[in-house]
Amino acid sequence: MTKYVNQDVFDASLLLAAADYLDSGSELQLHSTVGQLVQYYQNDYVGDYLFRNQLIEMVPKLVKKFEKISKAVLVERLKFAADVRMQLDDNMKRKSSLKKMFGGTAFTSGHPNPNVRAETGLINAEYLVNLVMSGV
Image (cartoon, rainbow, N blue to C red; front, side, top):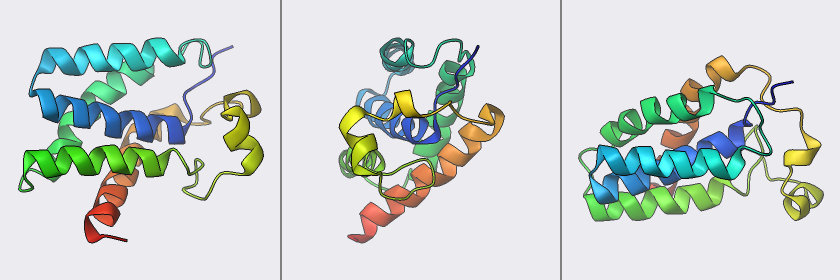
């Protein structure tokens, strides 16, 4: 049975891949980073073949939303936003201490609707970067 990457993992992966892509400026590096993320999560989310393509599609869209910000500042903010996102659950609420302790992947059945995950991830990532940029 396929278990799809949860929203929190997708969002954090999107932010980290965008930071790496922006920092390197290379499409090849984007594919390499996404490949590493897919490999890292493949045992927890068996059969999620959408994950790779969704990340590759959304990273340039996220970077484009912040194209007026200096590259160095944006890379830093993307990484910080990814750290913040890893502290939140799928609904952007603070994770329970039990989920934090064990990583949470064993306690979930996976994303219920992976076809909307990418667009939701883009919205969540944009929100978090804007929040980080505002200094909150």
